Image 1 (cartoon, rainbow, N blue to C red):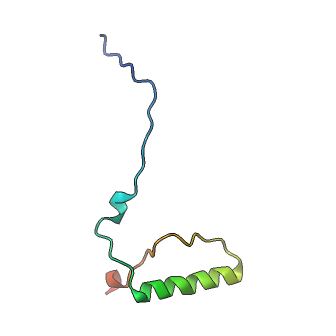
Image 2: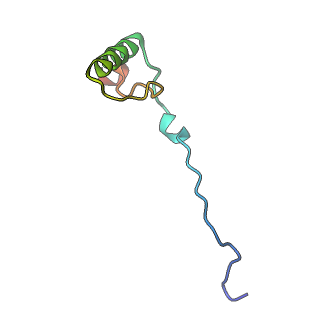
Image 3: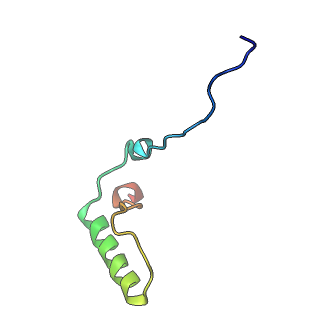
Length: 62
């Protein structure tokens, strides 16, 4: 062995689990704001991903 490895390829595995640590649950105010945003995006023809979570929580603003 001369410091060589048989390892030929690297396959990274991504996980968003760490992004959700200590993330507060979306409240009624947050979900209502999200729905208003989606309606507005539909009206102007902007593409969006409805399955994404609320990003700015009312609980963090207070």
